[in-house]
Amino acid sequence: MKIRIVIDNIRVPISAGDDEIIAVAKKKLKSSGISYNCDSVHIHKKSIDARRKGNISFVSSVTAIGETACTDKVYDAIKITPVEELSFDAGNEELRGRPFIIGFGPAGMFCGLVLASLGLRPVILERGDGIEKRVQKVDSFYRTGKLDTESNIQFGAGGAGTFSDGKLVTRIGDARCSYVLEKLRDLGAPESILWKAKPHIGTDILRKVVVNAEKEITALGGEIKYNTKVDAVGDGYVVINGETVPCGLAVLAPGHSSRDTYASLLSDNYAIEAKPFSVGVRIEHLQHELDRAMFGDESLALRLGHAEYQLSHRRGERGVYTFCMCPGGEVVAAASEEGGVVTNGMSRYARDARNANAAVAVSVLPQDFLKDPACAIEFQRKLERVAFRAGGGNYAAPCQSVGAFYEGKPGGYSSRIIPSYMNGNVTGADFNMLLPGFVVSMLKEGLRVFGKKIKGYDSSDVPMTGIETRTSAPVRILRDERFCAFGYELVYPCGEGAGYAGGITSAAVDGIRVAEAILRRFRRPD
Image (tube, rainbow, N blue to C red; front, side):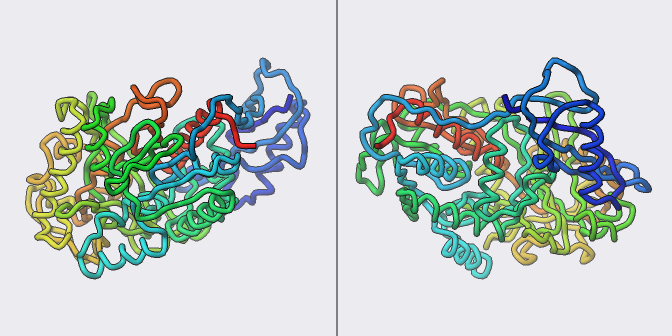
């Protein structure tokens, strides 16, 4: 039996190279007496410990492959587990038609890659454009303020994550995560995503990855149809522009912003429940000042990469936390409905823009909207429309400094940190008047706590732009132990839009899980 050996908590100075980290790991393995393959030793995760400014260090985990060992024995800082390999079992039921996948975000993409690799020739239906046209339409929106509600930062090839930092951090523990990272690497992502503790691809490289995934799926007999919006879905069919199209099954991976899809499913009596999500603002800091605050010396960013953070604070059942932190990035206009302003964050692989940004978001609980899925969607929509009006129209976003927010005065941001949203298309406003009271109070409390953790985080002239509403899906499409929607035999809710994931990696993992469920059930083509 193959075993995976992980040597944790290898701490070395930031002047040390990767070969020194590997040498420390091999020394620990030798003293433990565990047999391993020397060629298999590599860095598994590598992070920076900057808590002590004068003594910053790398903290790493190293992994190796062995053949057998006593897994019951306790080793110091060494973990041994059996090697988990993905296996795709074959079922016996006949699949009466090609599988359709609704949505080409991470969940739909990875479900499609797995099904295509095993001969099921999926048809992927994506309401938005392919990468090239999608980028053109987003650029046009920035120039003209004319929004294409079908192809934008939320909809199109690669899903909402295509216009993001491409972060791959996930809290789920699943063997499929390694498969996802390795596949992304094979499709053109940097090798570093396999070992960095906070891996990211960047929107510029992620677009190329999506194009390569499309090429692989089509080369294996699959098909991707862009500008194809599904109006309804049922057992063995989908409805497109009023036409009922038969299919073998439907994987429903619509993304977290497909509100019209949710409305259609609710009208067809799908079992859907409201789930928690979060709303808040995007906060921006000068990246070099953040580097100095977290490293003690901003020049260390040349060696360590720009500083990142993840902050949280809780009071009772309500939390406030930073989300989707983008070093060297920009705040983007992420609206998908006319008359609404939505913010998000994006950065390229180099992370070389002037500002860092992150969402500061407050948890919204089902009881805040009567536990009604339709009310959950409307909760988000109302905030976006309020933000649109506060911005003055044309998708300008409301903006306020932290100091003005504390004092209840509109605007207040200075020219020291220039808001990056839509090339500076912001209008001074007061979030005290735009956000619900419980969000306002938790934001203020959280900002003060975060300011104690990172010097200057809540400085009076730090700008905040809003409103951030699309942190996750507001609803969950319920599915049974077969991964089928309740009451349906051939509909498989999947990914973040269905309420089963919270980011690129976890959505891709759920896409693989659904593909496995389909393969366990149906016979493969000869």
